[in-house]
Image 1 (cartoon, rainbow, N blue to C red):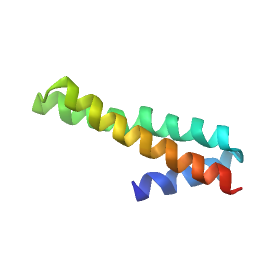
Image 2 (image 1 turned 60 degrees about the vertical axis):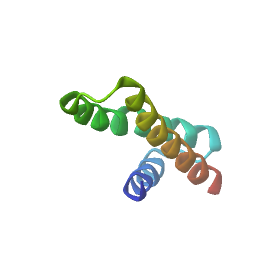
Image 3 (image 1 turned 90 degrees about the vertical axis):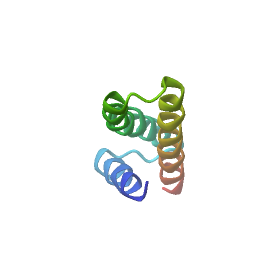
Amino acid sequence: MFIATIGIAMMQHFFGFVTLLTGIKAGLFVGFLFSSTAISINYLYTKKPIGLFFIDCGYQTLGCILAGAILGAMH
């Protein structure tokens, strides 16, 4: 999560996301499109239950949204 937060901060700095709402959008983008796809590959091969997949993806996405919101609000 630390590395994802650094990535969100770099993306916000590069694209100029300086508000709370754009920080939330950046966190949603990173959490859903990057974290969830990485988790999806593991679940595809291990064949774990779909409910557990949604819990793990939701946890990562929510963490990235929270990190993006905090970083966006700091500016």
